[in-house]
Length: 212
Image 1 (tube, helix red, strand yellow):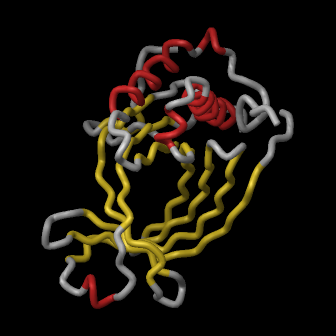
Image 2 (tube, one colour):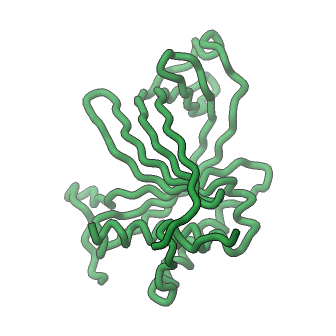
């Protein structure tokens, strides 16, 4: 079955987006370079904040059905610092059982301001290494940094892009997050067509949000 162009079936008009697509594709090719690492590539939607004003930045710049798979997960994610100063995320189920322990390292971020849309984008590249830990006794000397309860709905589109809709609460704050992630990103980067489709999906969501 041929791949759909984007989540909404139709491709974004390419001639209007060549410059943005080129920046994102160059960003991906620059930082995804080690075939031995498991990279996480995702685009987060929100707003780019000017730290001087604490407001959104302001710059002088002006469907058809697709095949999906669906998953609904609830977890408690706790971030720790290990004695070796590694940043590690421990995911537990609602009963407190350890589901996954993942070391995550940031590689690079690319913020994108979209003045015509209510949402801005941050494309992030991280490495993720799963750790073989299943017992609480194995993490007893780790220092807890933060904890969030996550209620997440995930859609996988044509087995190459995953859309996560997450309600995350920690302390007195509850956040709603929208992320688009490449599935099997290292393998995907070997196919010259798929980074462009990933980019089209990111921009199509930003464009769709501007109509709502």
